[in-house]
Length: 198
Image 1 (cartoon, one colour):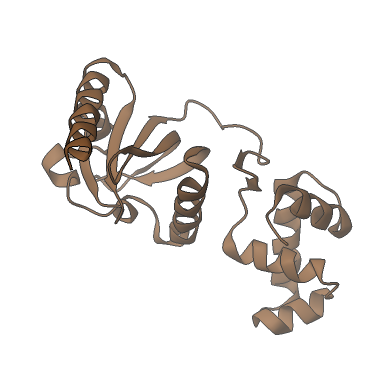
Image 2 (tube, rainbow, N blue to C red):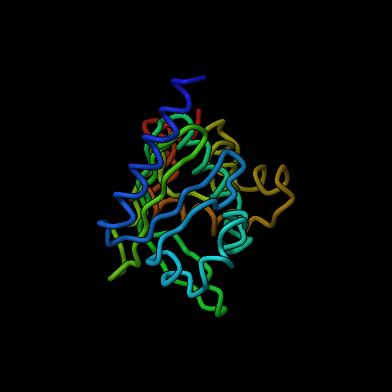
């Protein structure tokens, strides 16, 4: 108990030092992904007062279409302990959005996780940018790639996922672009190499 209290105080001291010295937006998130502390730069990034940010779930600042990616990134952070991701779309209080680059550290303090973010100044790194071992594929793109890895044809994938063959082809083209490959076989090989599919 004393050790835990000591760890908490040490964590609070680290946060206080960071708050005074870091130029990036800082967010402390609990295990439920609730924002429990943010600095002035975070409030500026989100264009909202601190009191309107603290207590809200992190997903409230992300387009709903990207919630599966948020879940995947969270799982990766919990598994690896560290995460660097770019570009990531964040919703602001004024209805606009901004692309950010962020880094995260799991268990910065007891059951608290630290995210540092900054607005992206440019288009970001190539589409093959990774977090951990995975490329930035949507959940649906990973499903398509996984089925392609089992030898399913475009028509078979479409039937299994209740999509049109044209939609499957569009997903495959996006996968090729994101993985920087030219065909299905290369995409499957790259997906296996990066651990995106099994």
